[in-house]
Image (cartoon, rainbow, N blue to C red; front, side, top):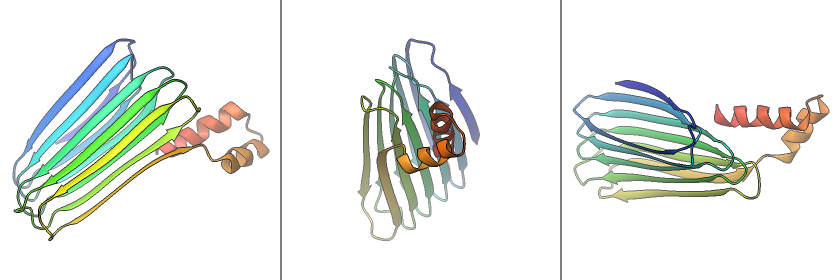
Length: 181
């Protein structure tokens, strides 16, 4: 299964609630992007049996004043599942984002291989960004990593681009695009 989705800001409220039952040998790839809205909530629930390969990639460039909140839950119930969750958010003036990612690995999920990453870029001081990875693991025979960051634009990178002739706004746009790659 392969899904590519882009959600635009239409000024209202939005809620996406996606549930997947992953049968043995399933391969799921989901790529999405979101601009947020007055209030936007996106939930992904995956229930994985065995030998499931899951790739979830989100690139969210949140518009000024918008909100975008996300919850991702991956339940690994049997052996040899692999999961990669890679979410990046850019927060602009007065935006608010949150990410909660959870790996729930059962005692029967021997050989689980999970990577969870959430990177956030704050473009102004008045942005709220929250991130919370949760690893609920009930077996020792797995490999699992997680990492979350919240940072600002690197001033040295801005200086370098401006010294090459880019104005401040163009330099910032280039850095945002490179972050979201």
